[in-house]
Amino acid sequence: MSLSPSISPAARPAADAGPNPATAPGATPRTGTDAGSARPSDNAGTAGNAGETGNASTAANPEPPPTPPAGSTPAPLTPGTLRTIVRELAERPEEWIHHVRLSTEERWYRRLAADGDHEVWLISWLPGQSTGFHDHGGSRGAFTVALGELEELSLGGPDQGLLIRRIPAGTARAFGPEYVHDVRNTAVGPAVTLHAYSPPLSSMAHYDLRAGGLVRTSEEGPEQW
Image (cartoon, rainbow, N blue to C red; front, top):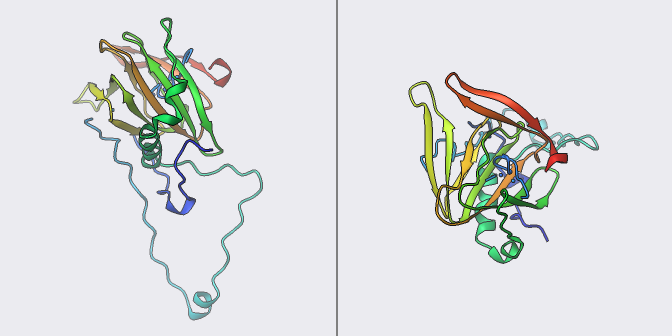
């Protein structure tokens, strides 16, 4: 049984770029991965279809759509579609709550599902646990806080500096392939999050926040998760 909602390719919005559980998938997971709502990236855009013209012959006998080559990579899902996946899954706790574990050493995480075009992660956070600044290796993503509360740090424009968002239970964040953030539990109790990434995570880079901005310090791949 799939853990993500059934969304046909025709119903999915077209892929878009938006504004880093990563170290959990939001940031990447550790003994478990990562997990937002002044949400500039929470509203994923949908590309429209340009108008078409043609003669009566082509209208009556349309060309069949091209067949994708065997083994081709599926188009990535949009941030908006990923947000829908995690929101709907959060409303079905019977599918994931029995997997939750807590780790005092570092965030616990578990991959719940993986398809050709996306994957879903479950992460738990004890007070004080965080991802550090990270990206998602070019994947689009979304996460929602199912239980508890988290805090997200990201860099805004030149006039905004460091942005800090409280992310209470029920809030979802969605972002594009270039997004970098730090997610942390600054509350007094544990938190549980659900994350979706498209395409599935292939790498994650980590950054230090310094006076001049973010400085890339390391990179990891799936073999380290």
